[in-house]
Amino acid sequence: LNVVGPHLLKKMSGGGDKKAKKSLYFEKFVGLLEKYPRFFIVSVDNVRSSQMAGVRKSLRGKAEVLMGKNTMMRRAIKSNMHRNPAWEQILPWIRGNIGFVFTDDELTNVRERLAESKVPAPAKVGAIAPSTVVVPKGLTTLEPTKTGFLQALNIASKINRGAVEILTDVLLIEKGDKVGSSEATLLQMLGIMPFSYGLGLIACWDNGCLFDVGVLDLSDDDIAARIGQGISNVAAFSLGL
Image: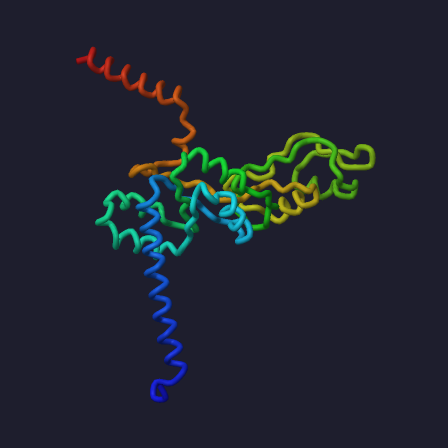
């Protein structure tokens, strides 16, 4: 012990703990993939740790959330592909700040729980807008001195009963745009929190099939219409032959 030294011993011990933690993570991740028939791949951008704790609590008994580094997720899947070759479909989706929500319940039920967990948030300067922001027309709580600020943003307004009234609905920020300082300041002055953040659904897994979450919005009528269109195409092709 005297020859090795306490600092080197601590480093060696830490390395062993790190390797053991990776092994446990791989085991847990693969175990969840095998245990549950369904899961969501979710985006966790702008989700705080306290909000994540609330999500886990709301899903207790319904689903299980797993986060982790993308490199570890990919390595866990690649090294265990022999257990289920279909897992290869997951790899292209592991990018960005993502996680997994595993369940044996219906995906639509879990989606409703996740939607309820979203919380309102202000528009921060430099953030990419997740949705379009429209400032509605009408009387505001702004003082008359703020009309010059609105004019700089090309927002038509007038003084009404000692306050500023916006004359028309204003498309302030479009989805995907970067929030500017003037837009963020205006929304703050109006007390508008235009965005809501939570676990964003990216893709779904259901018994070996991975697909976009938009499929969950298809109704029976939508599916019947698509099948009907396909049958009509086959009939027309057959008549042409």
